[in-house]
Image (cartoon, rainbow, N blue to C red):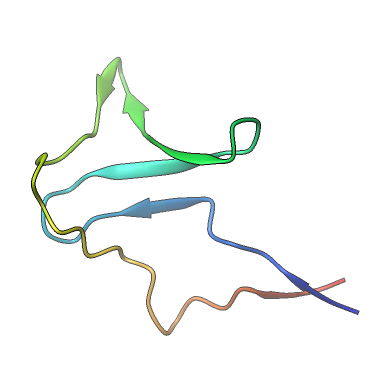
Length: 60
């Protein structure tokens, strides 16, 4: 059986915003490093670093 594994972390290539997937809340949330939230720019049209090299298909 094939299992789909979505990404767990992503970063915007334009503004540097970094997000992690919150499993409990089922939402993306800004990553915190050393107490600093990596929020990027508020009005950025984010270009996430998930591209054709990422494969969501995992063996089950």
